[in-house]
Image (cartoon, rainbow, N blue to C red; front, side, top):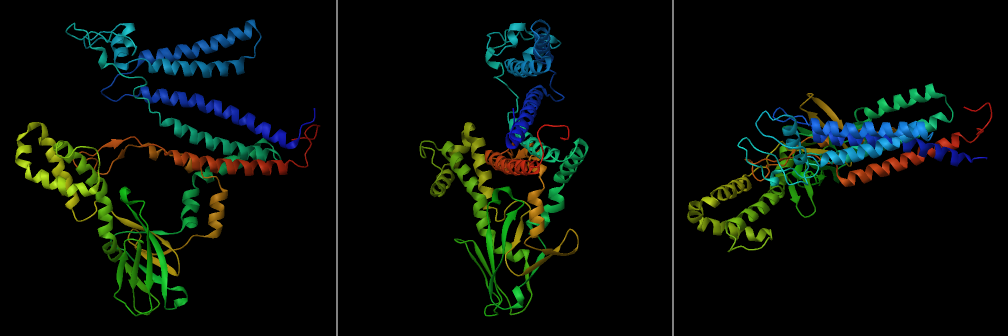
Length: 479
């Protein structure tokens, strides 16, 4: 039956995608199980969990073999389908087990024993301790304890990358044999891994201004006037990363000592003599925005102070509001009742935490290595780079570099191992209680990456259909 070229290409791509998705799903199950099974020097291996999962896998192949032998079902597709079901059921079955009780079932070297029925989180028994006393069932772990579910988002991103690579391979296969197709895909894969290094800076433009560095800005055509020279964003302090400022430079010479900052609009105005070069130092920019940056930095600290103050004086400050207007009243009340609070052993640690937060708010500088990311708007800009000891040009980015950066698939968008590293919450509740949380890929990033994949796949398939235009779908001369 004749098949249209578009239907042939799309059908072939969907078949490839289905196979890649199934393989990625199986790998994701293994990753999730590995995140649960992992243990440090003070932990124990989960032998029972490994055996349980292995039983499900073996059963899948046995059932597929029996279906092939007795019912003449094709082995490979049935084995893959049964394996996906078995691995899923096996994973959730392992998640119903308590790792500690499972270890005590295998090894009672600590004189703690457990029965097979004790390892399940939904049963009453929880083992017998070294004194012969039953362990309370409340001490059992919950469902899927230690499973890092955020790995699912990473697996989805890797699947996105495979979909793009599959579209490129299919596009090449319409005109080339398997060897050139494989070489092109390998080359694009390697190039895409290095695209940030090769094209990122050239396409994005901009530069980082660090403490102790300075910039030289030249007005367009060396003509005196009032210009929007560049924009800058704080870097090195995650809590301030969403701030952005516009820098205007007045080179008319009317007010050379002008240094103003409009906090409402986020505009810095710098004056200069009427000349072709304007020196702009890091210290001058930082001095103008220092107060606002410190206020922004203090916001979560002040909210935490209000919460701590409410816990110290719940009767005087009931409710859960964190309005900043309450903070002066809370500080005044805590100061008045400090002797009473200090004698209350249940509130001594909370009072100490309140004072630590207050000290951080009173600190006049923003903690961290503050730098500014500078993006040129008009004129010419260069800076003295302290890391290389030379002048570096700051540009708006090359048009050709932007085009190539978009055209080359950037695999680094889908490989986010750094985002999964433990991230320290800045100062946590206080500088003495820094907390570490697991990194997670934001949902918005997944949506953006998904749109990138859809556009790239649509483009690649459109090219594949166009390249296939003059080829027959049947006959001896087809590739």
